[in-house]
Structure formats: C-alpha cells, structure tokens
Image (cartoon, rainbow, N blue to C red; front, side, top):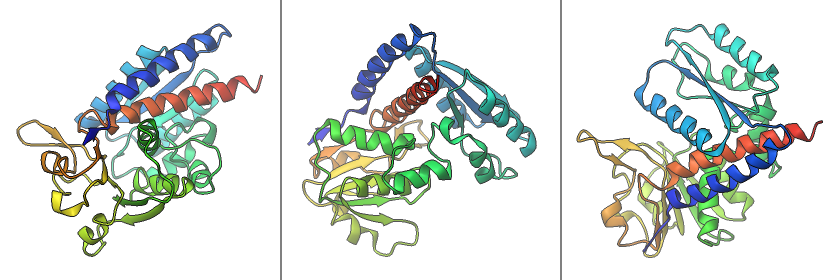
Length: 283
C-alpha cells in the first residue's frame, strides 16, 4: 500500500506557482484573489484562513470580504459586481455553504466566468463536460492531479464515485470520463452501495460520513481517494473511509488530513494564476 501524499505534492505546486508569480511581478502583474465569507461558520472560517495563508506563501494578493449571516442577497450580489469590475482581482471565490435565505445558484452565476476560479459557474461546468478548457473545480482538479503525479493510469479503469454533489462528484465524474475511464456515480438513493464499490479500480468518496467505506466494500488492490472531512467528538479529523482497515486492502490511499485537502487549495491557486495569465494576454 502506498500513500497518495497530497501535502507533499501541494508544496511542490506552491513552489512552482511562487516562481511563476515572480515572473508576472516583473511585468507589473500580481495575481489577485477575493474571497467572500458570509457568517461565522468555524469550518468556513478555517478554510478561508488556509486559503489566505497559501496566497501569502505564493505571492498572490488576497482579500477577504467578511459579511454578516443576515446579509441581504442584493448586497452580496453588489459586492460580486464590484469585484467583477476590479482589474486587480483575477479570481472570486464565495465560500460555501451560504445561509439558507440566499440563493446559492444566483450568487455563483453572478461571478464573471473568467474570474470563476472555483469552477462552479454553469459556463465553466459546461466546458468541463464538453472536455473544453476552462476553470475546473479545485477538489476534482486536485484529485486528478494527485493520481497523475503517482502515475496512476486512468484510461479504461472502472471508477466509482460516492457522492454526487455539484462541487465534487459531478465534475469529478466528467474529468474521469475525459480521461477515458468508465464511471459509476453513486448517491444517497443508490441501492446496494457495496455492490458498486467492490467493482472499483479507483474509488473516490466525498460524502461527509466517517467510516462509510469499510474493508469489505473494496476489492484487493483498489485505489482509494478519500475526499471526506469529518471532525469527531474527540477532535480528530477523519475522512469517509475506515483508513486503518481499508489501507491493508488497497494499493494506493489518500490520508485524511494530508491527502486531497492540500491539493484543493493548491488547485485553487493554480486557477487564480491561470486567470491572471489570461488577463495579461488581453493587453
């Protein structure tokens, strides 16, 4: 069994981004990322802080717009409109989830597609499914980058994804399809989940349920990508996979923490750098 070390790879990616940012600086260009944080959710605040620190490490300018939980949708949309027009901002990220009184779809659609570094705008999502260049959601991009780094062949593989969200499961399925894998996408209404997971050459899990995947649910030698992040009552952070037991059965596995999480942030920085490069080509 080999660990898919996302933390180490993310560090290498950050180093490469830092060098590219320095090259852009010589042309008087500094990539800029704006993050919008609504409310006081501790997990969201933690994610935003990690993104800000990563930007600082790589030389990307970042600013966080903190808004109260009860902010009106119109005010949020006005802030996005302002950032769309700001020439110093290359990427706009709205930290999810948003409060229930705000229409998340309307907010995501308000972001200019060329600044949609989260890859959630329907324009960019459509380009993924059409296998065209665009901004790919950070977590799915991180998963594919991590597997390719370890020379995992994707073509012709049976890939099973557990979790069909617009943020991870659906775009990840499109990326695997674009790599000529055969993809099964499972969700809350899937019957006999184990029947599907046992067929997986590559199993990706993004549900948010500790120990959902057990040793008996995977086949010998499978590759397991645990995308889930769960905080237990004792403070431990674990994924959706029973790591200690499943790791004896598989050939590759991601740890939690230290697997997909760091890759998500690194991929976001890659998208921000890409947006900055696209901006410079216009002039």
